[in-house]
Length: 200
Image (cartoon, rainbow, N blue to C red; front, top):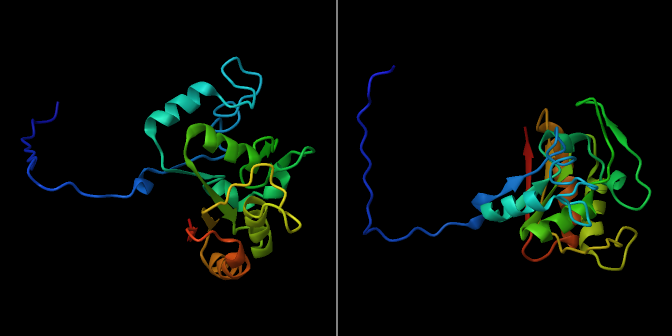
């Protein structure tokens, strides 16, 4: 056994409380193993509601009280194309990096509805890896415009205020794509939008 270590903790009860943003308690979900399919989204399970959301997972997440939840990644987003996961006729896609098939039955609409069930703010991370700035701004249009425009037909308009562009494997492409995305998406942003770009 290791030697005992003497440690002290000092608790200053008379110090003023520190204000902090609830945003630091954010989480993210990713299409990895059973996080989504068979995890929080499991249609047909006796533990799932009519939308296929696992109610036990919703209850557990609600206890954590996350201010925001980011999706669909993580590195998974670098190969994710949002149009594959919307509409009634969805076709599975093959992720070349992870070598897995995604059925695309959990997409934008399901994510937004799941966030509403949990009581958290949806944070969409766009594909700056294999995607384009136009594809990214189309996704924002789908989420934020209620009527006008080609993609403004989201069944659950959300006025998305938290979104980012992310690319895994390097920052050079991200920097170029993110600048183009910023220009294309500016008219689609709510006044309180929080946008970021990152590479991993």
